[in-house]
Length: 161
Image (cartoon, rainbow, N blue to C red):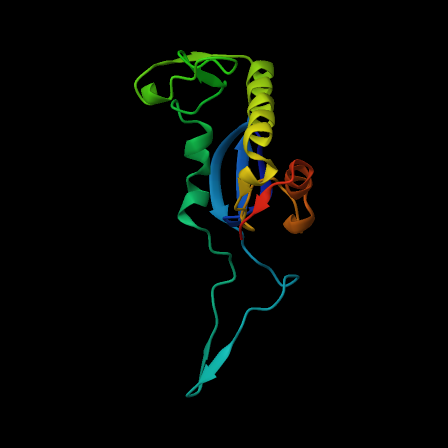
């Protein structure tokens, strides 16, 4: 008999139950609330009582996570434009025209690192702009004190809220 695990996730799309069987997501549902959870609001009007259902609401993209995880179009490996040379000719005019080739994670990290260094050297650290919101996916509570901000502060970035 196959066992289904019922897990919880509370990311930017809202709290959800995630049902997993054999390591694969099989279903996602809004989280049901019980008596141990905070009470819902109640409005009494004209002798009637109104309150919301005892379950969470989710954004549409929360329900799409399962489709995104298992999509055949999902990128599983870093790609680089075939005519892009981070140390030489960048061929910016051919963006959107040339194809892509698979590269290693180490090569991708090296390209990102060298591009950050190049931008800081040529334009100064303020040329690196970040516009974060509280709905990022770095997985931190208290995101203003998160590793994301520590990383950006180390670069001397420009913050736009």
